[in-house]
Image 1 (cartoon, rainbow, N blue to C red):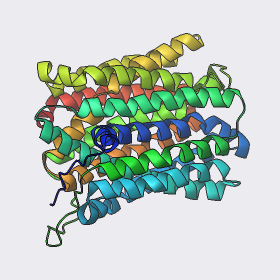
Image 2: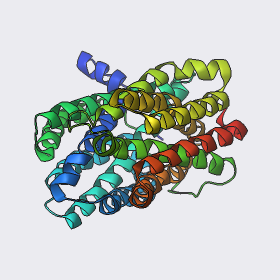
Image 3: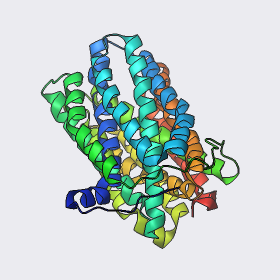
Length: 384
């Protein structure tokens, strides 16, 4: 690997180099939450039922999981920095496309495109984060993922405000894309070159094995919890709790806000108690929060429940990716494939369960799954 360590004399360039990786995490979270916040509006515009909406979400998951070999290939051939640039552009293009899709078939196509771009961007920025953590000589992955939560929190609140003014999803998404194109470019230009040498190892993808499988399975369950709450909490608030379009995204805002606060202190907790205990007890807390939301008698209590769930599940991805990243970007992509398969399975599964048994029962299953994460984390010594 070759790395250009020249900072240059431009103060803005130096500053962008310092904030580029946290900004990438923030941007991913902002776009993710913006899409999640407008799902009720998109559903209503196209008059989709729960099962049909599940198929749309399934397409996004298929795009995400199916593109992980592509993400590994891009990282191996062009480096994580350039991969983040390419995938970031596709994110900014695919999001407005989702907002203007006039029919189900195109919505499914654009959802798959968005999922693919999101997963490639995610693998690239986590690879950049693993390098930054190694250079720092201490745990910083939780703090980087906290910036993702800053983005999801801001995206959820912005989505709530925009939806309350009845702004169409397309204009909402287009404005975000136009606003963040230049910052994406600046972040890419500020980072040092990490493109591999021509004779570098060309192995581009590997199925996880051994303890990497265990890490992937923990990430898999964590992705089901995160993705399901992101995609279905707003619909639960609107359809079951009676919240309006402006109030429905507040459940995910609470979830994302508490994830942010938890990740700000997560690295300290890891250093004091170890990753296994932090992830395990956090997953139990997340399960309690989900059941509070499911049993809530009013909107504020439901928001509190989802917020508690966010604080509990916050540490799964940072510590799984930190452990996998110590084995290199190829191992990271393989673990991410298993982990983000939960994004493929989770939201559609909740939709089908909701179609057959109701959304309360479907979300209750997510609470049970949090208990499974706690049990697995307690035995996963490779998290440390």
